[in-house]
Image (tube, rainbow, N blue to C red; front, side, top):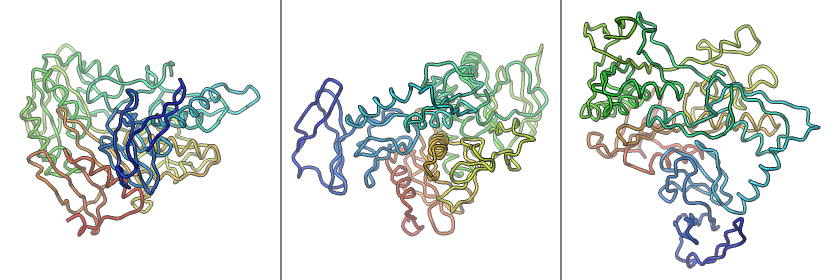
Amino acid sequence: MNEDLTAEQGEVTALLCQEDELQDGQMREVEVEGQKVLLVRTEGRYGAVGSRCTHYNAPLVKGALVGNRVRCPFHGACFNVMTGDIEEFPGLDCLPSYKVIMNLLMQLLFYNARIPEVNHSTLLIGGGPAALLCAETLRRNSYQGRIVMVTKDALPPFDKPKLSKVNEPVSYYTVTLLSPPDARARSLGCPGQHLKGVKLLQTHQDAQDIHNSCQGQRAVIIGASFIGMEVASYLSNKAASVAMVGTTQYPFERSLGPEIGKMAMHMLEENNVKFYMKDRVLEIRGEDGKVKEVVLESGAVLQADVVVAGIGVVPNSDFLMGSQVQTDSRKAVVVDEFMKTNVPDIYGAGDVTSFPLPIRGGQRVQIGHWQMAHSHGRAAALNMLNKPTKMDSVPFFWTVLLGKSIRYAGFGEGYTEIIFKGKVEEGKFLAFYIKEQVVVAAASLMFDPAVSLIAELMSSGHQITKTQAQ
């Protein structure tokens, strides 16, 4: 079988394999003149696209192929294997399916030249992934009006999940932007929270400050969920000591369950992290205006040079107070399945919103996932362009501890049972979260591409029953 790959220099024709060597539903990574290509056969058709996910360069041949799209095994991005188009996030770029990408690039060059006669503007408040994908989608769909993005961040839109993992944000744009993100880090609200050395993690500068101030120092992390645990993991080989304070018995207990939380706690305990669980901060004491120690409700006193709080976020919706835009009791902006607020021509997307989740029958939720914010931004943009599009993404997130990545898909709030495959204590497992006899979420470690496959099944409307999970 010959497959044509069109590049800027011209057309390249290469013999990839015989037709009967690739069965329906199979993928193969091949090399053509130094370029790796994903060759796919699905539903009787062949596709040839780039072999690496455009988010973090994961090998898509190890992902989950369902119908005409492949889902990345790492973080859940999805690509159409016939066109290369990105259909689920995170990430921005399509795969280099050369005929598609050449057309896309030509379109983008044309779209970025705003036609003077077009008298229309779109204001994007916030510089997070929702605003970024909204701008990208508007331009990709021929929007010729003016786009203004207002953000408090000193950097252009960047890959914020890396702040708590490796302190190396990846910028997407090369312009300077100026305002509030969708949500802000929640402050501790205890005496001493304003002492020098007490840190919140929200911006790239925050991450740099934490990195620099913790070198060889005593660090105390408040909050044993995703941000706190990732910061503790990052500092475990940099700080002189790391103490973690959490309100539950184990980290991640409410979201991932006690078994996975216990495993994660043991991982970090073996790497310089001491845990103070089922406890709370009473006050932070200082000397000469600088943090000195953290006092817990249990009576424990932790010596500290730096305190990092990772206890959740608060929607940045204060500026809407007094307006007609509806917010809920948690200050989240209420939107429908088209990301529309109750006020015409005003849309909401990202962490700041409360929205109906299709896989839970339209249950109204507020989810602060990086991937979900991308999907919000895309849906909002298409609806702005009068292209009715429901937000129908399956939540997908990941956390990295000591170089190991736990992946999660679905919405497990209210689960009543967890069914495990593999052994959690050995660090290789697949977990099914059960509610009302069906799987509502899944998590895994060293079990790829299981969670990606489950996310694709959920996305296509398939229910996995408890019996099937067993």
